[in-house]
Amino acid sequence: MNERMKREAIRYLGYGKNTADDRTLMLIDEAFADIGKTAGPKSICRIFDMEQDADGTIRIGNMKIESRSLSRNLKGCTKVVLFGATLGVGVDRIITRASLTDMSRAVVLQACAAAYLEEFCDQKQLELGEELEKENLYLRPRFSPGYGDFDISYQKPLMQMLDCAKNIGLTMTDSCMMTPTKSVTALIGASPMKVRCPVAGCEACGKTDCEYRR
Ligand code: SF4
Image (cartoon, rainbow, N blue to C red; front, side, top):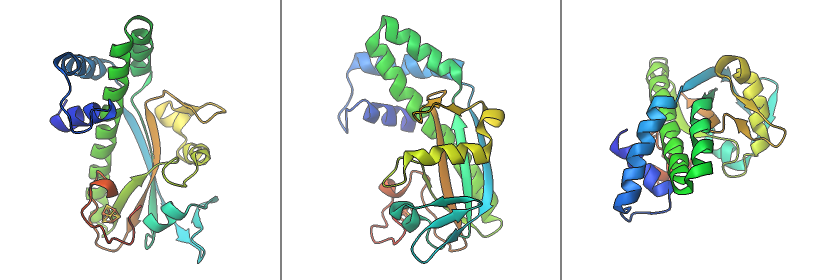
């Protein structure tokens, strides 16, 4: 666990910029230790060509996406990375077990697992960014179904195009719930324009006048 993950977990728990109490801080340390022992993080990514129609409709292979916020974020991109990641079933198991015996521990585990997953995804994205920069392509922030007006239902085609079930053991219920639950799918635009986006995304970026801001 690093300090950034800890700060994120504290934020997910609703403390904002306030300091968490000692008991919560202890639960957080324990939760990260338990997650570290049980998580089996896996990820998959595939790079596709993308096109954008004049009305902003995005075309990736046979998938057609209508989303104003995603369309702004992907403006100028020639390629897009489809990305999926999961912490595996072990983390779900310890959260379920905790929710039967100690609800406050379960809530802390949820927050820490979310922070752990974000950190894992950020690491993968940094590695990918370094690879693509060798081809003069620069990554935009990760954009998941459910952000802005990018409908959650796009999770299904993304998972199919990545063959998530086979590659990382990630499936989805009819109501778009992912199994294991601590998982994400996302698109990451790749543009020939040399814009270096922080991996933490637009919310953490100082370029307030950026035309690609999501
Ligand atoms: S606001 Fe920052 S992070 Fe967001 S697209 Fe622009 S440069 Fe990238």
